[in-house]
Image 1 (spheres, rainbow over the protein chains, first blue to last red):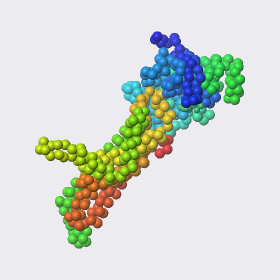
Image 2: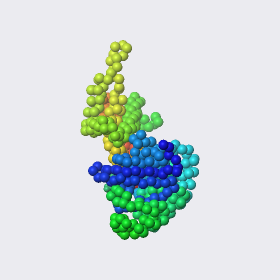
Image 3: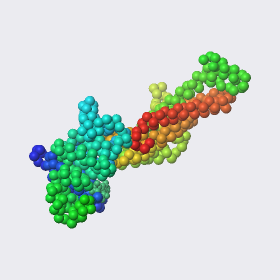
Image 4: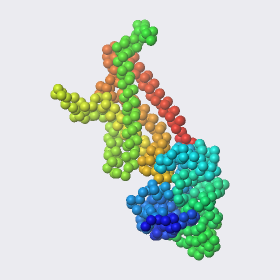
Length: 248
Length: 247
Ligand SMILES: Nc1ncnc2c1ncn2[C@@H]1O[C@H](COP(=O)(O)OP(=O)(O)O)[C@@H](O)[C@H]1O
Ligand SMILES: [Mg+2]
């Protein structure tokens, strides 16, 4: 059955994942529609990063199904490159390539992986740097940039692959409070442009503004979810309430 | 040039310091040939040992266990035995089996002593290079590799574009030490009659009884060559330095 854009971009069904004897994901299910922005919140160790890493096949799942644009990520014959072209990922620790400048970081994958034309890629890299407000930093090495600047380069680096969905894993958790905002602004702009986003975050104010739907996870299960207006006001589960009271 | 040669003849006649390699055309040529052979031996071994190091480090990261075990065994063998004994083993033991029969009925070794020296010494230093590169690769954070994976890089692409450039920078000081050691170890090829610098010096001092002079010349040339190599490697290290990877 061919995937059509009116179906959910990502369909996650009953995903289980264990590391050794520890079951980290215990049957996670949810859908993400095109241009939808969802936030995943929950205590540290609840499996949020693992879930994101399952979505672009960085870790294999044990059971269940993850479909990205109708393509089963769990399929052993999966074309990982085709999947990862569609799914961009930004990490807590930026993970830029330290031996390449900001612009080169953005250009590397389109050149090496997609084998695109260098002039075209360079023009796109400059546009993306401008988009994340880093004009003039083309030739700076990651080591010369602040955390917030590095994180914006990392976002631009993912965008350079023209993904259909972006995964953000606590991308502001390692940043100074002053630079958190500049990164959140960049993500919000992306969301407003219609980029499908799955955002793991501890920034509740941001989640409330940007998310269409919020999922609260704890110990490998989705405890509670709903649109932000409901979620933050009417959370019922004691675990959710305790988490929110700690973080808000 | 002739004036220089004449000066060395004068030096010999007045002080007894006998540097035939300057004023005697025959000695000059054979010493220069030996010098070139040494350079050729060093250059070949340096290049080949680096290639062995890179390939070995790649294989050590592979998921195919027999290959990893084979490389591990190779490293143990070459790291735990003296290079002089390795040369003897390759040249006399292996070399005597690997032969070709010529049309005239003669049996000659397929691989000459220079080639054996290159093979043996490259694998000797290469064993250390594998370990050096592997340590460099292990120093690259897993998260950096994961970022490359998430961008669609293959394992080979990650090795070429991310791991190696970073690991190489991290490994450079250790690599330089090992390659310096390799340059010096090429003089062991003397033992299997490779006509390198020490070997021809021996011929020259046997003819002229000028051992102290020739030993000094050989030592000074080694100091110069190794010094030049270290200078180049230091420059390379500086050229590759990038802000923020703490090198
Ligand atoms: N590669 C791994 N090997 C073993 N355990 C892991 C691995 N990755 C994550 N875990 C474990 O899985 C659990 C969930 O981790 P994670 O997904 O990072 O949670 P979160 O992002 O919500 O903090 C943790 O207990 C963590 O130690
Ligand atoms: Mg996490």
